[in-house]
Structure formats: C-alpha cells, structure tokens
Length: 408
Ligand SMILES: Cc1cc2nc3c(=O)[nH]c(=O)nc-3n(C[C@H](O)[C@H](O)[C@H](O)COP(=O)(O)OP(=O)(O)OC[C@H]3O[C@@H](n4cnc5c(N)ncnc54)[C@H](O)[C@@H]3O)c2cc1C
Image 1 (cartoon, helix red, strand yellow):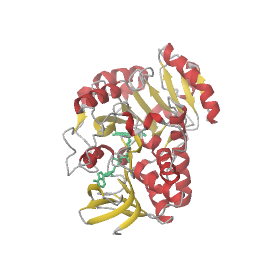
Image 2 (image 1 turned 90 degrees about the vertical axis):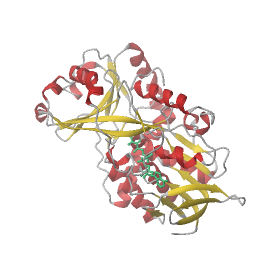
Image 3 (image 1 turned 180 degrees about the vertical axis):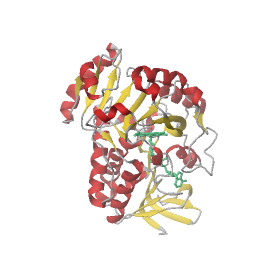
Image 4 (image 1 turned 90 degrees about the horizontal axis):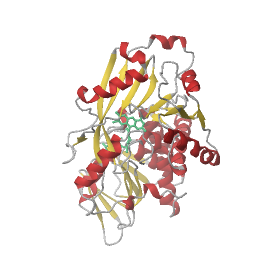
C-alpha cells in the first residue's frame, strides 16, 4: 500500500471505477481506488444494467450518453465484455402532460445530436408486441440506448484504469478521512494511512457515515427496490428482435427482455427505507428479504400493461437497496467547505449515469472547472442543516413518484 498518492477514490462500484478510469484517461495515473470488499460489492452487482438516454435536462442526458460511450471505450481497451444490448427504450406517456413534455424535449435532443422521437401507440405496439397500449398516448423513443452487464462494465473500467497505471486496493476499508494543516488529506484504513491531495467519496449509501466525522450531513439513504424476473414468454419466439426497454409511469416500472423472459423493476408506491440508523457492517453483496405484499397492486397493473404476465411463471423476485437523495439526483462535485474533497455518491441510476458522471467529475478535478454546466447535481444544493427525517421523507416522496414527469 503506498503512503502517498495524488488522488484517492473510495468505493469500487461502477461510479468509483468510472472516476478512476476517467482520471487515468486525463493523465492522472498517480491514483488509488480503495474498496472495502470487491469491485461491485455494493448495489452494482445486482443492477439490471438499464442505460436509458432519457433525461429531463439536456445536461443529464449528456451524462447518460457519455456513460454508454465510456463503457464501450473501456470494453475495447480492456477486452472485458460489457454485453451492451442496443435495444433502444420507450418511455410511455399515459397523460397529456407527459406527452407534451416529451414533445418539448425533441429540440434539446437535436441540439445534443442524440436520436429521439415521439412515437404513436401503434408504433409502441409494433416495437413491443406483448404490451397493451390501453391508456397509452404515445412514447418517447431513444433508439441508441439499451442495457449493459453492470458487473462487466465496472470491471472494464477498472481494468482499463489499471492498464493506464492506476492502482486498485481491494479488501481495504476506509475508516475515516482527515484534512491536515498542510492541506493534504489522510485516508485512514485498517491497514494503514495514505495521504493524498484529493479524495473522491464514491461509497453510495455508505457515504453518509464516512464523512459524518467531518461535520458533513450528506442526505443519502437506501430504499428497498424490487425486481421480478419471469420465465420464458412463448410468444416472444415469433419476435425476431430484442424488445426495447419500457418505462411506464402507470405501474410504475421498467421492463426489459432478459433472455426469453422479462425483467421488471418496480417503483413501490409505499417505499421502504433501509438501514437508516447505519449500514450493517457485515452487509456486502447481499440482497434483502422480498416483500411480495407490497408488490400486489403493482402486479395487477403490470398484468394490465403486459397481459401475458398473468400466465408467466416467476423465476425470481429480488429486493436490493438502492441509494437515493431527496431529489433523486446524485451528489457530484466538490464539497465547498473542504478543498480537495469530492463527492460522487447518491446514485439511483448509477449504471445509466455512472460512466458520464465519472468523466464529468474527473474533468472538473483535473482542469479545475466543470466541463459543462450541471447545477442540478452539485452537492451544495442541500443544506448541511437538512434534518434526517426531512431528508428521508423527501426521498420516499421522490421514489414513489416513479416515472411521473411533472415533479422532478
Ligand atoms: C434491484 C436494483 C436494480 C437496479 N437497476 C438499475 C438499472 O437497471 N440501471 C441503473 O442505472 N441503476 C440501477 N440500479 C441502481 C444502481 O445499482 C446504482 O445506482 C449503482 O450501482 C450505484 O453505484 P455506486 O458505485 O454509486 O455504488 P455501489 O455499487 O454501491 O458501490 C459503492 C462501493 O463502496 C464500497 N465502500 C463503502 N464504504 C466503503 C469504505 N468505507 N471503504 C472502502 N469502500 C467502501 C462498497 O463496498 C461498494 O462496493 C439498481 C439498483 C437496484 C437495487
């Protein structure tokens, strides 16, 4: 273990590995990533890997698009497959406000050079033949996106960073951070200390406890999030293309093809916060007990949306902790009170935005200014005085909104 380096990234999920990779691409290879278990041990290993290009703001869309591009680049450099399925996505409109909003986004996507169109219910049926379009007014179609293998993408980023000279320390837990009088950070691990000019905290829902001793009150908490994987859908045998991902504000859920079956991620209307008193120390690569009763009303809606769902066997239902901030957007940027301290945490859509976010932050660190304007994700948007109860209430409300558009 080195005793000094230029920059330390804490956390080996997709976000931390992406920051490390992007720093290395910019020439900062005097860098060390410290992970307390293994790469992807947190939420990354069980993520569905959906990478939509649909964002409410053009700059967020840039994060999405740059993510897939960076995973593909890392794949070609490392030969580690990311298994990108370029299926495209359809985000359904179930009321006039949603449809109008999707139309308004068109010129913004054109400016970014990202393919985007608003399609009719008939087109939705053609692209996703097992879906009932009852109540669907149209959809936003982003043909360039799809899904990746989150484990593969993280390892591709890590391997490419290492090929460029960055170092990764596994099975080292960071105990705390300290800013010395000389302006250096000391990162204390159970196996010794490392000094660095910069520290990036990319530890998802563990970030809150890690920076608490600095007097920082970071509003990130975990919620339970269920996914359902079905058995084979026989009627898909007649479809000679992979279905696009669906995002449906009605259930609300996302649905994509998984082999010959379906994978559905549910946004529970009664969200359940997890481990708000502190993440259990033994938690790693774990799932949470499933709570089928909470899914019942969503399953009924799912059957209305995908009628064949009623006859399908369920292969697995799983429940994993997902990190949220009060507005559902990550905390990405400097901590104003502490020079050299950066946050890359609070990611609810970390596979979709992780690659682009790592690139954004690395450019800011190396060049001293952000590569483009992205005020929506600056860590300073939440007051340090925000109470824990208020933060959790806001997180629950944001999560329960699912894909409804008007409140974000
Ligand atoms: C069921 C489910 C499905 C999902 N599907 C999708 C999807 O389809 N698309 C999408 O974009 N997102 C999805 N997500 C969300 C996605 O999984 C997360 O946004 C993403 O994995 C977050 O990545 P991360 O790197 O921020 O955090 P993590 O992957 O949780 O990584 C944080 C790392 O920090 C390490 N760490 C913590 N504390 C310390 C310490 N003190 N010292 C050293 N290391 C430490 C942990 O061990 C962990 O490896 C899903 C989430 C769930 C629960």
